[in-house]
Amino acid sequence: MIEFKNISKHYQLKGQTIRALDQINLQIPDGSIFGIIGYSGAGKSTLIRLINLLERPNDGQVIINQKDFTALDARSLRQERANIGMIFQHFNLLQSKTVAANIEMPMKLLGWSKAEREKRLAELLEFIDLKHKKDAYPDELSGGQKQRVGIARALANHPKILLCDEATSALDPQTTKSVLDLLKKINKEQGITIVMVTHEMDVIETVCDYVAVMEQGQVIET
Image 1 (cartoon, one colour):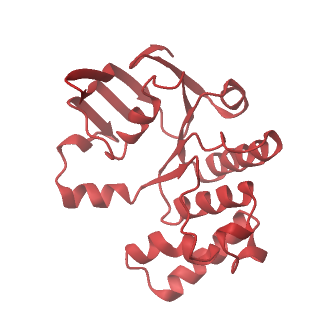
Image 2: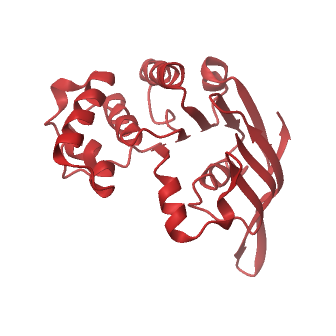
């Protein structure tokens, strides 16, 4: 269970206080696909980045599996972040590295052995159906293939939670469907909790078990 308790986040901009999030209380059940939808500027991306504390709230608690992430020290937070994968709208792949090297990067950072990395890489390439692109570079891939590599990289460390920040908004409708099908497969076969930020109602209707609607930094409906 992911819980937001009385979460507020504000910024100072040109002497004004911008309230990005205002007293958010929300629960995301384990093993679900949970959508967060709203117009641009509603606070969706800020909210999802609180789950792995890429953003810190000014007030309130982020509690995951009964552990208060906002109270963790730096070392404990690094350990917990290894259980959270993230995929992005613009893929965030390293252009100078091959598909294999991009996917292996999180495993290298956590000190996996070469044999462990190669075994997991083979599993992931099979899962995303890109074995034939192992040695290709990102600029040789289509948008859908790049996002599949991004998904594989996010899954590398066997995460329990997968965050998707507008993961399909840069893709055409057919490619979007294939990526959403893959996310559903991940959720069903691996039991990973998926939290999706989107402004596309079609995405919500296709894959999500639950949805929170955001407007001006508040959850107005679930």
